[in-house]
Image (cartoon, rainbow, N blue to C red; front, side, top):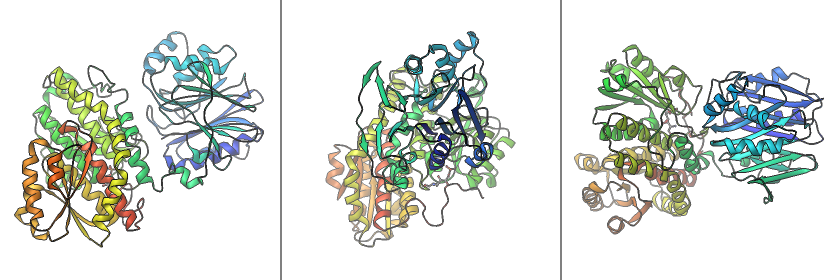
Length: 611
Ligand code: M6R
């Protein structure tokens, strides 16, 4: 996601901004820019693509400005072009502003400002902010910012400068991280500690609702228009540790980011107490959706596993046939796809060659394609007819974690949205599901804090004695999550793992069970619990060591299994978003115990752009 830096002090600002942006490259971005106050004028430089393009445009002339802001943009609203790159300006070119997050009500604000004569130049949601600041500005940028934030809905970390107050930076934060760095007569704003550790170890984390002002003398923080104090932290991390947010690996950081990522996926589409899901980005006509007689989901790896859960949810709610294909198989089987088929391609990166080829093949056959994707300017997002972005933020570890859970969230929202539009879901069923979807981010967070130690201990017990194989079993939805659990374990710990439909083992594979074979039995589907227990017993009779994964307080599973992993209770249909989390952690701790390269497993790449 976007990287933010702001500097005020007594040193030339340009090299500080550039180095900070370079140190945040790992966050992912597709354009970059800086704005500095030079002799009462704004110097604005922006470029699409990587930092090298920006550096080329800046050239050797770094100037002597000691105040400035810089940004690496990860596109959400509007393509990654120079005009959409941050910072953005007000009409008069006196205020420069950058932003990380999404302003949900930007269209409403934009319409109002345009009616007042403000001229917009970009396609971004962000550009409403400098114009709104201009609207409120009466000689005090901080006071104007405090008014601006009362009009905003959504997530933001904002930093602004104004040529009329050349020694000042003003910032605001809501649901997007923003840190203040406190140096010796120099102060910083950054979205990331990694950008600051080479300048200072003294940091202050702004809270939601804070508006802060920085000048050479120090920092002032306001909350609800009142001055407040915030604790100063002394950070010991080096740069690399700071990039990982203090976690030892990106994978575990990204596992822990899932609560926040899921909230981002919901944001603007489903709010607590909302009557319905708003997928305004899909301009499906009534005639089109009523004419769809089949859905085909196509993806690879983890995204394919998300597609299987998607199939289950869509079929259950729409009562329409849904097929799921592995993308590398899809186009070679002469698929039955035509203009009445809605094809859904799922891809975190949006660049997976097989998925892209499936998209093109589907379009050739006359189908409309909906992409579920995380990277806004990716090929898949650009070529699809419709896109639902997951907004999970950059995923750096090769093993997909937050991409999967946010893909599931999109599938659930899409299934509910479509079923409601087609009149296949009544208001009370819809309300029950949407309320629970809104509760899931918090449940994920609770689960993460409650179970990590327990999973670590269990992993050591299951795998340390040199075990080379493991089974993941389940029925219904649990079977699909088992597949994702097995993939995670294989790809990062190199332990051979197999996912099996629990009822299918006895048709052959049970021959592999021997005393001590670890089995993870997923038991979240209550209507299938008795059958699961019988399957667990069959395995135990052959010596398997079974860890059951169930909802909290499920005593039956606790009694039957050697170990249990528990997740907060939810509606069975939504369980995958919770049950996958312990499996991701299990894989992580197994890989750690076996001293594997967790973030860069052997033979694998994050984005597979060859067929
Ligand atoms: O970027 P994509 O979602 O299209 O990638 C598809 C797979 O390569 C990917 O999900 C892969 O299986 C994961 N990295 C596994 O964790």
